[in-house]
Length: 384
Ligand code: SF4
Image (tube, rainbow, N blue to C red; front, side, top):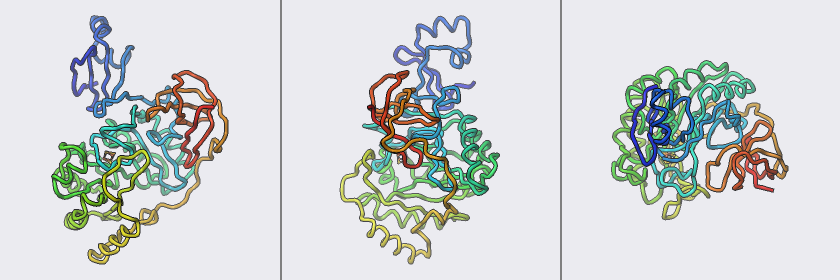
């Protein structure tokens, strides 16, 4: 076990694993334990310790098979099956950026209280069970509420997903900032496509949109080039935020055409900024969808491109999915197993699903909850 950083903070000795996982051991215990054990032994075996996400500084829940937290049922981690041949794989939550338009309120957040990371073997084992339902042209799409490449075991995850029968395509989303040439080389032959968020070609506008001066347009441009050099196709995915990057979308298209994105798949996935209930709210008026599609049509004509995309453009079609475990309105006896992703929420388990329940009951409680959402096998509930 190699620590990327070791330091003291407050009452804790802090060990950082692979730049992402902070293991905090209180000094009073560390001093005693270190007389008998190595740092590696203390970190891997001994309690008490607290896990935190090194980027977001939020408490981090390690979801393992032994934790008995199912991987189906929540959007913050695990697997999402929306009834097609694409399975969303979410190995970690939390982001290194702070985009002003973020639909999941990442970065400086008002709503998120906990992050999650999933053990690779557990994630792939459960993925394989789901994939077995779906035929032989499955796309594993690695995304999440945050930056997926903060997952410290990404290459292992890709290698293992590759071996799952039926997996034809592996794609991932990224803001690009934690990738470098070496990491990209290591994914050559494992990752088919990366959807790269790049919403401006101008450094200052890019940093305003990313909500941090740590963002670098130049770096993300290099990431796109390194991916193409390593046979990883690139889809540039700008979010169009009216009043901020109106003049940038065409520049992004021109950059993409120059470096040759979209070799096997569409090269551009331009998105219209949408104000989500729990997302960040940008000042000004969002573009109406009819106006947005008119603009895309104009760019299609000008650049001879296909920009109004549908799932079929990526070979996505309906496929068998898991049966729903509950119906809306069901009253279910559940056990609270972990803090929830957002304030006021706890994670509960019943019938092999994880459920986000609005409650302040502590971990270990058994409660009755009323199911309020079941779409795509994602479950929400309230205390009854
Ligand atoms: S990169 Fe994505 S998840 Fe991260 S803050 Fe920006 S929009 Fe949100």
